[in-house]
Image: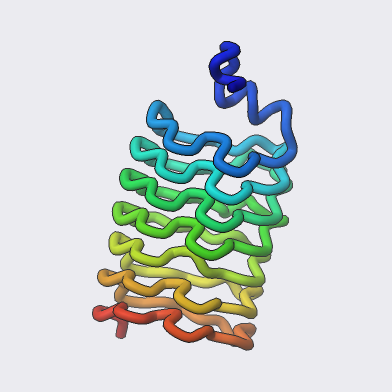
Length: 171
């Protein structure tokens, strides 16, 4: 609706604190998204099925705390996600990046507590979890068929069932 009123994606995001459920669903004009500092939550399906989206990054000083269920699922051309300056991000929810098969570059946030949501990201070959992660939830990296290594810190208290199911190259 807002885009029909002539507002750009950047203008819309500058006026809200949460990117609402399915706000940019199936918006195939997006190639790159920079999440502005004012955003606190990326809700369910916010960028789901943005088939041309290739890169997601975050402004310095951002306040994102949660990336919710299916937020970026099925973004088939997504190659890079950089959470490196997301100091407030503590949770990446279920299926958040599910079926992002071309995802090859993943930088996780330094204060992450709970992770899941990278099911069927067959382009991932290596993952380094930050030392703050406590929970690797069920199915977190299932069907990441090219995943060869993952660094799991001693802070991890729980690894859910099927967390690494069908990660056939994991050593």
